Length: 395
Ligand SMILES: Nc1nc2c(c(=O)[nH]1)N[C@H]1C(S)=C(S)[C@@H](COP(=O)(O)O)O[C@H]1N2
Ligand SMILES: [Mo]
Image 1 (cartoon, helix red, strand yellow):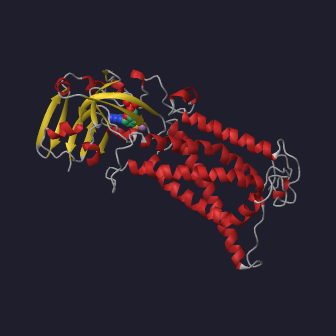
Image 2 (image 1 turned 135 degrees about the vertical axis):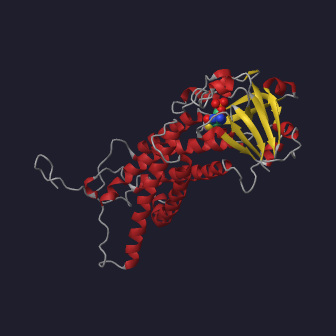
């Protein structure tokens, strides 16, 4: 290769990277915590995906009411903490990208298979990990610079990431064992040319890494714990929404201002060909119930609030439908992913599942779903449909 200046530019060799910090001793130790973060993000991510199914094969219990809130906070926290860990880990192993593999034919084929597995799984792992962390972070900040479905692709890629991680750990297990049985400063497993002192000591780099990961965790926990709220610099929705609760999508963004403020709004309840129409004033005359339940957005922010309104099962009962019915909820919103949801039978039957008319004592604001919205226990925020138009018993 030639550079514009006419000098020869050559591909670097592993030997060019002489810092003692670029060592297996660090890669394994950082990798261990990274692995924990990935495992946690994977498990909570699968749970979150399942919680968003319209018809989960096994119903998700409605208690504890804060279950999804904790799940999602852990998901975003482990993913955010993984970002600095992954960057440090990639930096420590970067020189290995330039090591030459064995040439086919010159080595026994088992060794070749091993190299292909090792390098292949690393390529897939690095690619999928970068994809997961960047799309996840973008989603937390509500920035969608892509046209594919976030949920579908993030979910599919999670399996690829976790699969290649397992292969990677399997291939590296002998190295991991040997490194962890030695002292951090032991050079026995180092590349022979990696002898130059780095800017930091190995211990110093490890401490800095843990501190950075902890900072990332605090920043993301700020989206859930109000005491850490002011650190939630990544979260797109912080405190300060109307009625002391953040707003996800405003009435204007959802293009429902006109329909939601129309005086002749009614909530329609359907069961087969039977239907009941109720104005807001009529809903207010029914027995009101007050519950304290969180909104827990899939993007990781959450906040608890006190909701007052009519039990969904009381509304369903007006049509003589059974109390444990599956209910499809439709909103006034015409476009957008979160405009409809389905209440599974156990959610409809729960005493705390309300068609809420008030929030923290005041009439719901337009942005929080006036004239009426759904609030139910242990549910992803995206299913807490605002600006409800119709409840339909589907079965
Ligand atoms: N009709 C409708 N309902 C909706 C949404 C929406 O975009 N449209 N967003 C959902 C999402 S993603 C969340 S997290 C909650 C947020 O409720 P809040 O804005 O009142 O805090 O509302 C849910 N209900
Ligand atoms: Mo959300």
